[in-house]
Image (cartoon, rainbow, N blue to C red; front, side):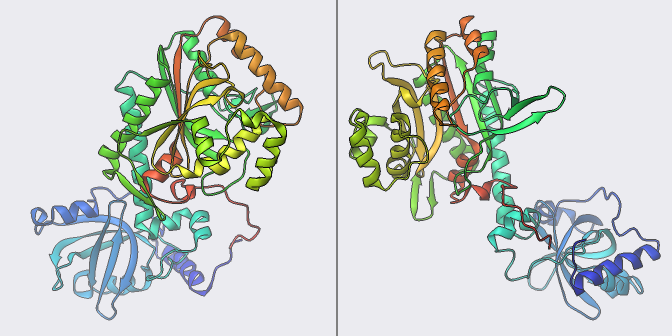
Length: 490
């Protein structure tokens, strides 16, 4: 049983007393109420009409024969004025005893402006709709402990309006992306979360077991291979916004459960995806956030077009001082890894070496949005090769704020090449690289029926929101981020 302090126990006792009086302390529906912001914005129009409002009591001040309360709902806050002349005895004494900060109430009354100019509801009737046992955080300090904010997001949202505003903006961004794509002919679809083969990305999956089928399944690391099967089936423009899962570390830019937007367009290519990505983000900036320059800590990110462009090899040479072909020399690669102080958790293979150097030494340098293209084939098993450079593929990542924001390919639709690359990935997995992809024979079979030339794009929604809002931790834009379980239930 959850422990209660003395004040909270007193509130629990009040619940019993209310029930003895025939009053349900957890209330009933309360219709015909006006939002607090509507009341404030239409104050003069409402005049001396009797109105109803509902919400949570955020503060109670005053004593004796009159009290002021702050009532909060999803739209905002408004002041309430409760006095004995309006509620009449014994209703006022009942209110003083049984209504506490944190309670959810409904009120009925008329409007007036206080001497200090505060728009206020003079309460004539009051109902308790849900009695709060737990007390709100201190009035002047709010909820500031970061871990408690994440563990008890419901309190965080309750007492920190800026947090709720961030999640409302996130919702508007996702809605805008959906509208932007559907207006351009993309069809929203849903593909499996539970997959027999973890494919579509290089990552360690979560494993579960299906009892009826008596087989292991994987929480998807990406929807890519199923979405491209739809192109084979005849759909030409599809997208999905949904969860993906990767059994990896947790830090300011990684959460094991995250939201991805992936889309695929038949008869498009990398350049088409680049234009779409840039226009979509600039449209979000213009129509949702309205701010093209965002501070991320001490860094200023400039979300204005056109975004800069460079190649993977150019970026490596500029920020790591070494080119892709040089790193094929095992001795040089080992010296560079040691020089950079990089600890290799994975096997010392070319693909892992260039990935680690790029992630640690190159990626953090890109603050303004920049398209980095022409990736090595060794780290891009699902992208189409460049015609003039067979060891490079038609792939870009959009980097911003020192992190990856989007990933796109001209999709590999050659089933022979795809099967060979899957075989190479499977061999790496057999050597101990558990993030490499497995052979997916059914996907190869699908390609053998013919997939049209296509472009594909994936955008990390959490990181996009994080950057556009200028917050430094991905946990600030995920309502319930993953945290290590605590034994205490206080």
